[in-house]
Length: 403
Ligand code: NIG
Image (cartoon, rainbow, N blue to C red; front, side):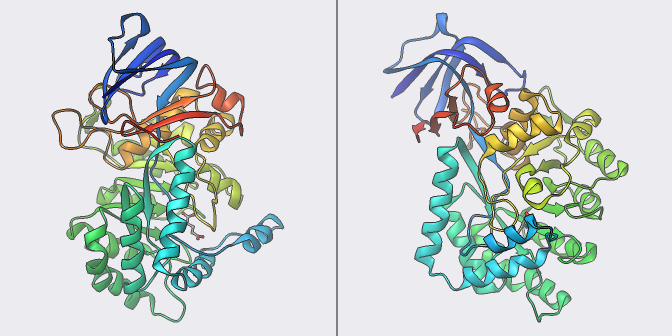
C-alpha cells in the first residue's frame, strides 16, 4: 500500500543535505519513505492525501523523557514558582507514589503520556526508569517502559534512596539491579549532580553499564557547573543532557568529541550530543543552555522535552522548538533539526535505510522510516511565529496514520 502526499508548501527534510523543498510531494510505502521531490514529478500511488499547502517535517524524536511514574508534584511546582529552588530530593515523592501503583495503572499512565506526545507530533521516543530505585521496582519500570517507548534507558542512579549509603546503593545499581533491568533496556544514564551522584559514583555506574553492553548517557551540568560533561565526553557517552552550566572547556569538549564524524555523510565515530531541555529550564527557573555557542563551536545539539512530574511536565516538542528560536537564538531550521535529527543522533538512530535492519528516524529521505509530521501552517517558521498554538495537523508513525 502506498500513499502520495502532495501539495506540500514546504518539505523540511532534515536530511544530510539539509534540503527544504517547496511545492513538494512524498510517497509513503508501508513503513518507509519511497519517494520525495517536486510535486510536479511525483509518481502515482494507491492513495493520495492533499496537504493543502501545509508544511511537512520529520516527526519529533524526543530523546529524553521520564514517563513511567505515578503521583503529582503540583505543590512542589507551586512552591518553586513562589521562590523555592529545585532540588533532586523531590524525586523521592514520585518514587513513593510509583511504587504504590499497580503494573496495570502504571502502564496505562505511561501509555497515555506516549499518546499525548504522539498527538503533538512525536514519532520516536525514549523513556527512562528512575522512579523505582530498588531492584524490583526498577525492573518493573524497565519492563513497562519497554512496552510503551521506542528506546528505554536505565536510570537506577537517579537518586540515592533515603537511609541508604550512597556507595552501597551504587554497588546495587552496578550489580543486581543492572542484571534485573538488562533484558529491557538499551541505554544507561546517571544523574551526576550535587545531591545525586558524585563524579566517582557516576563513573562506576557508567563503566559497569557500558561493560554490560549498554550505551551510556549522562544528566549533567543541570544545577551548576560540574563534572558531567567531562565524564560523558571522556567515556564516549551518546549524550549529556541538561548542559545549563557550561565552562568554556565543556563547550570545547563537546565540540571536539565530533572531530571523527563527517556531518556531510553522517559517517565516522559519533561524539557526545548536547541535549538541551528548555521546558525543564523554564519550569525550574534555570538559565537556558548555551545552544547557540555549542552549535557555533561545532557541537551537535538535540532538543528534548524531559517530560517528567518534577521539572518538566510537558511533552510538547513544539514548545521546546519555539523556546529555542525565541530565547536560545537558534534558527527555525536549527531548532527543528535539534528536535528531529539531533534526537535521533543522541539515540544512534539517525542512520539506516532499505539495506539495513533498522530504518533511520529524525529525517525524511528514501528508505528512512516514514515518521511524518504535517503542520496546520505553510512553513515550519510558524512553530516559533505562533508559539503555543496547536499546529500539529497530521502524523504518520512508521507509515501508519497516528493522528
Ligand atoms: O531530568 N534531573 C534529574 N531528573 C529529572 C527530574 C526528576 C524529578 O525531579 O522528578 C530531570 O529533570
